Every structure is written in C-alpha cells, then in structure tokens.
Amino acid sequence: MYKQSVDITLPELSKPKIRAFTPEEAKQFCAAVKGDPVEIAALLALHSLRTEELLPLTWADIDLENRTIDINKTMVRDENNKWVLKKTTKTWTSTRIVPIMMDQLYEVLLANKGADDERLVTYAPNSIGRRISQVCEREGLPHVSVHDLRKTFASVAASIGMSSDVTQRIGGWSSDRTVKAVKEY
Image (tube, rainbow, N blue to C red; front, side, top):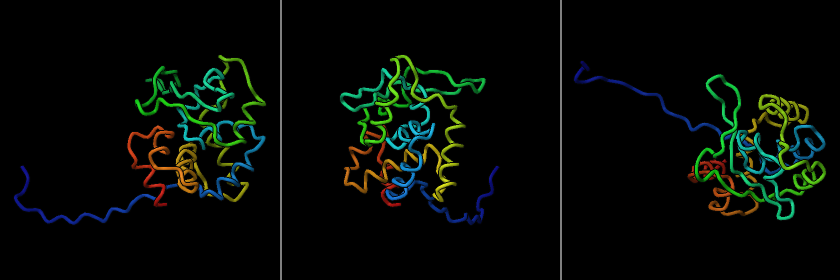
C-alpha cells in the first residue's frame, strides 16, 4: 500500500505566538473598560475565567466578604449551537475558588450586587468579544479575545511573582503548559 521509501521534507513548525497583554497594557485596558457595560465580563476574564465559566455565574457564586468567586458550572453549546447550562466545569481542575484580586472588580461587583439567582454577565458571548475589540481599538491596544484576557492573568501573575503552581490552580489549568508559555512571552 505504501512505498518502501519515500523522501518527504516537512516544513519547520513555528511556535504560535501567545496573545496576551503585557502588565502595562492590562492596566491600560482596565482603565479603559471602567464603567463600560462589558467591564464585569472583561475583569472576570482577567481573573482567569473562561467564557463558558463567566457566562453562568450568578450572584450566589460571588462571596464579596471573602472576595472569592466559586467556579462550579459552565455554559456549553448544544447540538443546535445554543448555549445551555452544564452543572459541571470543563475539567476537575476547573472547579475552583478564584480570589478577587483586583480592587476594580471588587468595587464593580459591590456596586452592582444583584439577587442570588441573577446572572452577572448578561452580554452574549460574541457581544463580549466585539466590545473588548472596540475598547482595544479605541485605546490603541493589541486586539485580544476573552480567552487572551484569561492568558493575560498568567502574564500578570508572573510579573508580580506569583508561583506557577498557584497561577495554574487559580486558572484551573490541568497542566503548567499555558503558564510556562505565557512566562516565556
């Protein structure tokens, strides 16, 4: 079926570039998104949350007294491409308690506190991404996605000296591959 000897030359693979803000760009982005309708979603992503983790968050998942976010469910697309609630997370390492580390997120959550069953993020996922792109464009920042904001968390964590192990646990990554890749960025 196959020839005994085939001379094949494969192209060199280049490592894909990590798209994430530098710590300075992250500060600029946070200032630019302040007061914007997408502020909560963007700041949650900067706290390491995936889109599918921030979408189902309700106020019952937020502990303002202890400054934590309980990640315990996700939103996924069904066979009809509609978002549906899944009462588990992507992986067992994704179920976690995330500390609210940014005062800006804490303050906007405190100012907008709703009923326990009320969702924090009411924007559609595509609208979140478009609005983040608009903020980046307006501020002259590199274009990033919601997922790139999640990787920015790892970049900022490295810049403030957070250990890779703690960064990985807060981010819910099952391996340290992403944390190491962002550190090399």
